[in-house]
View (cartoon, rainbow, N blue to C red):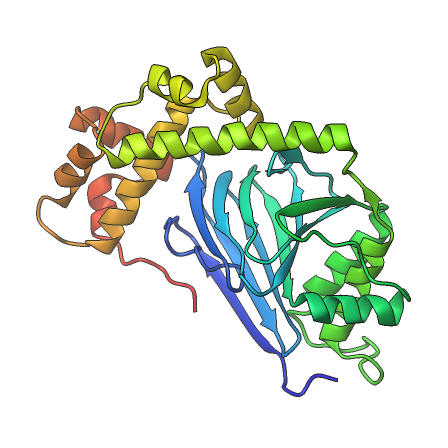
Length: 324
């Protein structure tokens, strides 16, 4: 039984701030980048006790997320995209799949608009103890990186339903014999125990190659931005040793956009972050536009408004919303 009552926090937002969601999953550091113009609203729910933490969210907008999970905890992820399948670490996800990220694992994640996601953060020892208790055997968990588990729909549906209930009063949920966190752990190990691993050697090797090409291209593009340079497909392809056509195909699969557009999206997201951090400083809009190689201020302002739904000067006057 848990020794402390659970902590519950709910948060809703109506505008996009690229820095506000970095710690949206317990212990993680996740950089969010909006992909296309959209109504940028959402909600995030946090629940944790002394065994595990549960983070659940809904984003109205398409987003790319890159970063790292907690160093001493596993993370079990579920993502259900209504507009399009979610792509993570080289694989497209099914609604009935679970992803297990090892301690400190890195993630490259793209989700379409109207995506529901949930993340359970728990120690390896606690998860395996629950597996032994409810399954009679330990789970085959990744020692590093991410592993995708495809299960029958029923176990994951029951787990998601229970996660949703963890943000409401626990009436009629058999708490006399099992606490809410223990129920979630039981349903989680039952879902993982019913796995049909999507880890055939050929699929795994192909996914690793795809995500490695994308990861290196993403780093090369960010280096160009950091240096204040313009986008160059010649430099990016030369650094990776791939053709421009192959690079285009990898980005279309991962993000649904071209590498050049991704360069622009990152730059615009960084400008927005700077404007929000330096609210009210004279000349900040022109300064940040020049810093990120936007040579035509009129075109920059239009691109910025098209993506975020407001002008750069409006952002510079905005009070940023924060997670509790």
